[in-house]
Length: 346
Image (tube, one colour):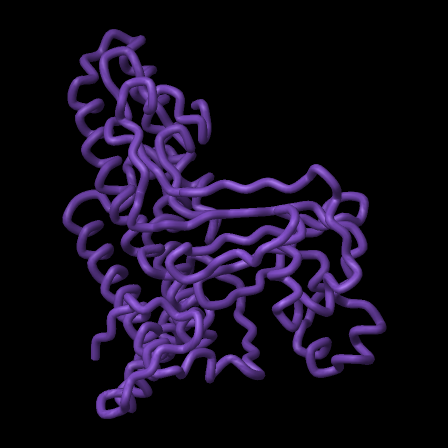
């Protein structure tokens, strides 16, 4: 459990970078960030203030655009953590004298970020960056050793999946160790962990993250993805854990035929949403649904109410597919900053 250092995976030659997902991160601590819910903001942007039923400053807030997303988290004492995760195929961090200045320059390019961070200051010596974030270990256990959590893999901080993967892998490894100490033959369990972990990592990546950064800046597409991603997460992972946590955490996600069928469905809609976004990029039609976009959801809970949210996500996706038909006979043109290698499909 050596975390991102992945000591054993590197030492044993099992460490692999996930080059299909070239994301990087930079983050810093800021002082002087404006209050999201201040009287000044309510006077200046009344529609914006009225759209929220609770204090925005109490929560983690996100800004998004084509190829990137940004977190803004309030910290004890009034400072804020702000960080950026971006796909290097789609986005380049602005130039600047320091990491903090480069990050702030990008935040100030966003209309909401500009208002909140206009007078903010980067805390000196408190900025960090990671490149090539996703990785995995090609083997996660052997005779006398096993790895779990971030020591075994990392995919993407979007949706914060790290603790989920940590819970599953540490549960399997703990069970493996207890069986071994009890004198049981753990050959089959070691084989299961190695084989199923590889499947779990691959499908978790392909269902949720592969080429997702192409549509992060499209409000309707990302809304559809959020509803479908979180809805299926509650059905596939949360419900079994609620019913029987001891059993559920010993079975890695996407196990067996049902798991693979579930994954195939998720991969399909994620791929389609990415293709729809690339079509918009190629035709210079990015972000046309973003202005004035507002929506509020009931909380995600593992009961029948999930059906309503999933139906809403499906409707958003299908509506986007219909709108995509307008590109069938339209001429293509790449927008400024769009990757020339963005493929286009109908």
